[in-house]
Image (tube, rainbow, N blue to C red; front, top):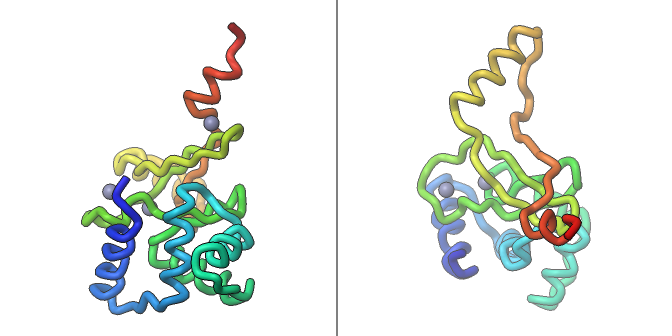
Length: 155
Ligand SMILES: [Zn+2]
Ligand SMILES: [Zn+2]
Ligand SMILES: [Zn+2]
């Protein structure tokens, strides 16, 4: 994994190219999520920023910042856990694809992978055929990571 500074400078470049501003507070929140390397609740983010920068953010402003970062796909919201996680493609130059999150129910490790385009078009077709319109294609899957699966397997 690239270091935090290089991830943040990629994020800054991204914001510049897209005409949006990574204000100091937004950057602090993103820093906290990148550093944590796991999904955090809004309150975990407040703790993280306090520990790192000795700044206490108000919950309302943290939620606004998290929304902003989510909209711009620098972070993602895991709806099932109501937590946020830094996008693992911040340092990539490709367009963001539909993400699929593999979430370990035991250690809460999260892995972000892309949904294959052909699979996505099958899903879209199925949805249209049933007379629905897709609102959010993001998939979150309950998983068990290899480490956890090994440690609880009977010996
Ligand atoms: Zn992502
Ligand atoms: Zn990537
Ligand atoms: Zn696990």
